[in-house]
Length: 532
Image (cartoon, rainbow, N blue to C red; front, side, top):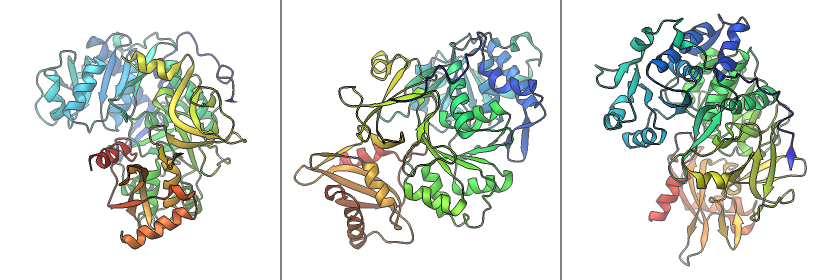
């Protein structure tokens, strides 16, 4: 077991505790009301402006009949409205539930039924899909539409009109008298093994990780300007590009469109961020872009990475070319945010780093007993941000949560120095020649070859029914996918790994499918292979 006492790192939160005050109002009390809190293109919002509109949102929710700890669904792109709605929900004592605003009607039907949200904040672009289900969903009573694209009717009302009807000092705008253990938010799992489930979190959960990971590891500061690749509906970004900068009075840079290498270069040129929240796929895309050599990245002090494995070769190339450290880490919806991370000045190549203060971890075998350092097993983690449960799924909750502990489906190993290494999900491991094999190990070796830009390795049966590695590859460097290159890559892997680990087949792709968090969608590729 490694880590520190979860109860000794963070001082107890007061009996009356609300995240809207903890993240937002504190900046007004500290005299930062006129400071820029948010940047969106050429527009800005100060802390005073965000707080004033969040108060109106709280009043709007109470007028709409939202009661304490009721869920409110957010279907908004990154923008000023997302931030003020997010903090307004907390201020009213409600529970935020954030969903990708680029989904389809069937997905929204699921989230509406699952959350039982009576009030929804949606962007005008979402309305065509939402209207296909909202009219028949009796639990959805009000839809406040940001930037409506036409006339609104029925349950739909223009957000700005509704907000303007709430006076800035209306009694309904008051801060809800919540406590640290009251419900605050839902974070959805990725849904890789079924429909997404909500991890239920309290006010204290989000604050705990802010006090430990954000302030002690990354060391967010008032002088920081933060920009992110993942979108705010994803808990990784809600933390790094909204909650964490607001806690210290920093500035968050938002943009509503897709995250592309060109978009990131545009934002860096225009706004000079100091902190970049990213994922390995985007780090790779930025390095391969012709704009990489012409964009000044000297403003960056640190880059954060999570969500998928960061290949050592990718880290090395980025660090050599930019001089900026990547702090790779691992977090989860179950724990809100990152609990194992590399630290500034302490990055161990290929590892996820060390335990974040306030968390404890152990790696266990099939019998749930801890395994020795160096051996792989499932990760068990505990700390002050552990979710209460998966909403509406008692069996799954019992499998994952044991009091303060959360047992992951991910496979890790820890070395003798206390650094953790990710081996992949237990259901991603491949049994080749009777030996459990991590696809990530094979992928990292392939990514070190100059012909490979992206890769996903899965198990596939050969003619004898035996499972062998199969590699989907996106090429780099103008190389052509053919038998000669396949032979070259096989030899490359064989010279670096055990003989049974080399891919028997290669399939060349222009791109690999991604999920809404920017990670390679292994599930889609698995289904594709299985259907053949």
